[in-house]
Amino acid sequence: GSHMVSGKIVVIGSSTGGPRSLDMIIPNLPKNFPAPIVVVQHMPPGFTKSLAMRLDSTSELTVKEAEDGEEVKPGFVYIAPGDFHLGLKAQNGKVFFFLDKSDKINNVRPAVDFTLDKAAEIYKSKTIAVILTGMGKDGTKGAFKVKFYGGTVIAEDKETCVVFGMPKSVIEEGYADYVLPAYKIPEKLIELV
Image (tube, rainbow, N blue to C red):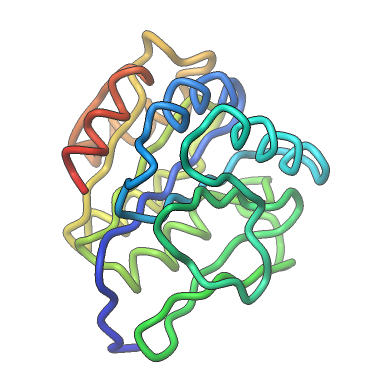
């Protein structure tokens, strides 16, 4: 809808090698980071919960699995739970998560494209997408949507990628505003928000 949402959002998409890159990013963000962060990591159920717990123990921000109907707030890193697409919807100037069991996209659920699509429609130019290491093209359509609304896209540089598939696709399509190794992404995010 036409609800204006204050503030920005960061949506991070990753697959193979993602946890290693996330280890270089999430723990290096300050407690007062002023935007919510949503992480869509291709993983089966159970693994996303342990990823959230592990990152939470090393980070100043609170890291948890996103829950259906939960309000999206700064100070949190939300991990999409395995086997669900993670959507966002705006209501009365607030944003809430919803979990979705619709068909796999790009052969995966959760899919980065699904989350970026919903986030970009709400946050428009205030959307920051980060596409990390992973096989395939998930995140490329989502990055297009972010660029369409005037948002910002960061792709992980080959240097720190285990698999240079997802970021490479985004870069080749011309959607990446910044191409950075994982360890340089935190300072860029701090600068952008």
